[in-house]
Length: 79
Image 1: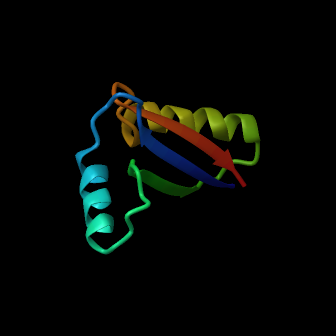
Image 2: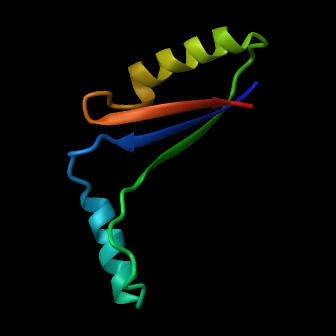
């Protein structure tokens, strides 16, 4: 089963990389960009046929390794 995990910073957490991207875009003439928040995209192929079990296992992976839950949110999509 394929899974997609999207990891983003929580609201209120400073995003210096996002600010740098916004600055670079402005420098390239993309002045309409108001703000940039960057994140991570992780694609997993998990040997599980039950969707609920797969989601629970991936949730555990996110809490233990893939996301820093103090400052990041994550979202799981199963395909």
